[in-house]
Amino acid sequence: MAKKKEQYTSSFENKIIHGIKKCSNDYGKINLKLILGVSGGPDSLSLLYSMHRISKLYPKYFTLYGAHMNHSLRGFESDQDAEFVISTFKDLRIPYYIKNLDSKKIHDLQKGSLEEIMRQNRYSFFGEISKDINADMVVTAHTYDDQIETILMNFIRGSGLNGLTGMQQISEKTFQNNSFILARPMLKISSEETNTYCKHLKLSPRFDQTNHLTRFTRNKIRHEIIPSLSKINPGIKKNIMNLSEIINDEYEYIKEITNENFISLSKINSNVIEICRPDFEKLHLNIRRNIIRKTIENLNPQFKNLQKINIEEILNSKTGTKLQPIENIVVYIDKNALIFKNTPHKSQVEKNKLLNYKEISKQGITKIQDWTIEVSQHKINPSNIPKYELNKSTDLSFVEENFDLDKIQFPIYVRSRQPGDRFQPLGMKSTKKLQDFFVDNGIPKRLRDSIPIVVSGEKLLWIVGHQTSNWSKITKDTTKFLKITFLKNN
Image 1 (cartoon, helix red, strand yellow):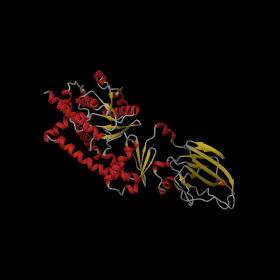
Image 2 (cartoon, helix red, strand yellow):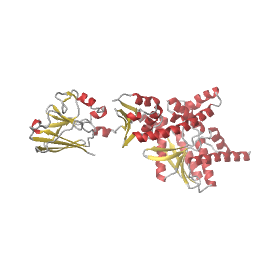
Image 3 (cartoon, helix red, strand yellow):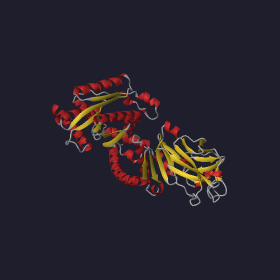
C-alpha cells in the first residue's frame, strides 16, 4: 500500500512538473521565483505540497512564495482558513503574503458579480506581490474540472470563441497597473486527483461551504448542470475539453489575422483607439468581431468575456451613434472611424464642460478652460491682404482667422453651440442651421459640443477650426482687420 501511495504521489508530481515546463521555457535553466496562490482547499494544497516536495528535489529550480487572500466572506470560517494557510506556510518554511479584504462590503458599493469582484481583488493582490519581489510567475491551482466549468460558464454568457477556449495555461494579466505572468500547470489534473493526493500525504484541506451555494453561477454549473449533462452522456467532460482544444487551435489562427488587421487599421492615442471604418467593413465578419473584442481588451485589460450582443450592436449601429458596451468604455460610430475611448473621470468631465458665453478680450490674451485665445488688431497692407480657405482643418491645436474689424461688434464671446443657432458660412449669401452645417461637413456628433463658437453681437462669427462667417470677411474696402488665434493647451 505504501508503495502504491508513493507511486501515486510521484505520478501526480510529475504531472505538476510537466505543467510547469509547459508554462515556462526557463524550467531547469534558471531559479524560477514562483508565487503560489493558496486558498487552503484540496486543489491549492496539493499544488503547494507538490511544489514544495519538487523544490526539495531540485532546489536550484525554484524559489517559492505563498499568497492567500482572505475575502472575509464567511466571517470566522474565513479567518480560520487564513490561519490554517499561514500555519502551513510556516511549517513548510515558505515566505508568504496575506491580505484581508471585506469583499462583500466592496460588492455592495460596486456593480458586477461578487465572483468577478473577488477575482479582480485576488489578481490585483497577486500583481502587487509580483511587482514587489519581481516574480517570474504567479501559479494557481485551477484544475481540469475548473476548466470545464469555465467553458460552460462562458458558453452560457454568450461569449465568442475566445471564451470557449477556456483558461489558458499561461497568460499575462494586468490589474491596477501591475502586470504578471499567470501559470496554471494543473489544467490536466482533476479535482478527484488532488483529493487523492491530499489523502496519500495525510493532509487535511479546508472546505469552503459556499462552494455548495448554487446562487453562484459556477457552483450551479458544478452541482446541477454538469451532473445533468453527465446523465445524458457520461463522457461529457472529455467531449467538452476536446471541443475546447479544437476551438483553441483554430482561434490561434484567427488571432494572427486579427492582430495583423488591428495593427494596420488602428490609431492608438493614450486612452483612445480609432479604427478606420471603411477598411474595417471590408473584412470578414469574424475578424471584425475579434478586432472589436481586442480593441476593448486593449483599453481595459481587466475586462473579459465581452458578450456577442455588445459586439453586434457596435457592428450594426449607424453613423452618429454613441454606445457604451461596458461600464468604462464608450464607442462613437463616425462616418470614417470607430472610436473607442475610456470614459473620463468625474474631474475630467468637469474640465470638458460646455462653454457658456465667455467674453474674449478686445486685444491681448484671454485664457478660457483649455484654450489660450489671442486677439490683435492690424491695418491692411494692400500687398498682403489675408486670404480665406473654404475647407478648414479639424485640428484645433492651433488655428487663427482674420476678420474685417469695422464689421465686428464688441464685446465678442466664445461659447458652445445652442439650439436654433444659424450661421452664414463663407461664400454663402444666406444663413443655414448650424446643425445642417455640421451634418454637411461630416462633423461627428461627439465633437460638436466641444467646438468653440465665436459670437459678435447676435451673429456667429467663427466656427473655430471649421469655417468663418461670410458677413465678416475681408474685402477690397477693408482698412483694418482683427486676428483671432486659438491655441489648445496641453
